Length: 489
Image (cartoon, rainbow, N blue to C red; front, side):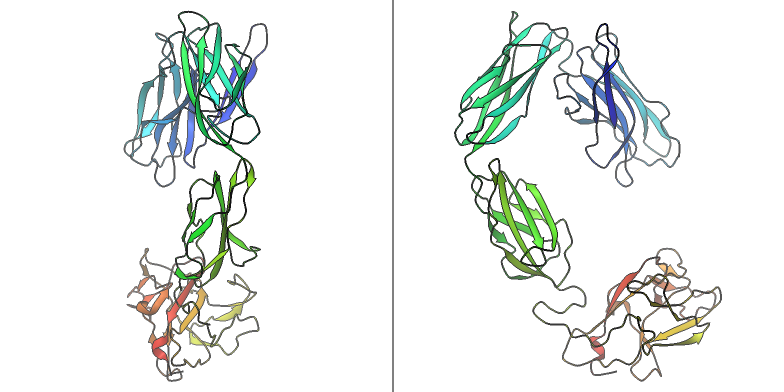
């Protein structure tokens, strides 16, 4: 949501005083309306929704006159939460935010929302506490600061009038760990003063910035701020989990380490090599000492990971590099064992001994839309009944090498019947007698990429009543366990 504030000082033209974008997350925000109260505070109201969890509702956000320009830091609030979707291509023709003329402080917002399939209108009101009385507002930026000794710490102290306040504000730093200097001091509202803290030793501190109006009776505001002073870059973290050399680790592991002295944040890298030339997952600016991988790692793969710490003095040394191996996936050999390939082909050199037959047979080598490489086998889904068979060369299944699996990629883009059944479909069969008879591989043996559903008994389909693949317009991988055929061809 984009917003702007224009002002027109006496005897000048209109100026752009500030602008900002309020977009704290992926939720859609639109149909905005904005207003300013008598004290210069701003509120912005709007509709919200997203594609899955947030139904059309109304929220608002705001800023005080003393807040940093271009920001809406006073928090987002819900005026009304939607409870139903809206499928219309026209929504919320009118939204408005206005100030109550009686007190000059109350914001009134009206907008559209959805309590059911029919839209509704909601009118709501709210106000800032810092409006109406003669006062001043004070804001210290940043609220927390980290420095490397012997550097100075510099804060901006912003002071703004509320309710017609005029005059100066005197500033003081109470309980600061060094020497404090404000420039200027006092500060005339609206205005800003630079606070510089010098000579602070290493440590973590909090102190109060106190603003006192010069006029009587005195008005006093206090804001507590933080200061973290470090003298050197942090040490190296110590890794704890996954343990070095661990096996059967999940594919979205939680990484944990012990805190490093002087650290304010951490970074982590996960790679497929100990030199970290191929980093597959990483994060930085972590406040804690654990992190859940933001990438789903491959199964049966060895990974290497390391962590380092940062603070205001710089980046610390890397931790030791540890390794772990992920859990075996469907059809994978167990960690520590070596897979043996009995047969593989990508049809790059042609059919390679594969044959096809059946009624209405259209199986052929094609170059359009292969999963990888340049070629694949393709068959059409005709408008008439067909029974098209694609048969591999004979493959001998050894004994004592479980598991033995068949892996392949396919795109069964045939006509489905809803989301769990098929009008047209494809199946996987195995023959152990040279093709004289065939047995379907059941869903129970499909470790990945199982059948979609049952083939319709109508229209004379030869697969009627069988579980089959259908309705996929993208490649899927199927992994079939064929260990039960050990010792056969």
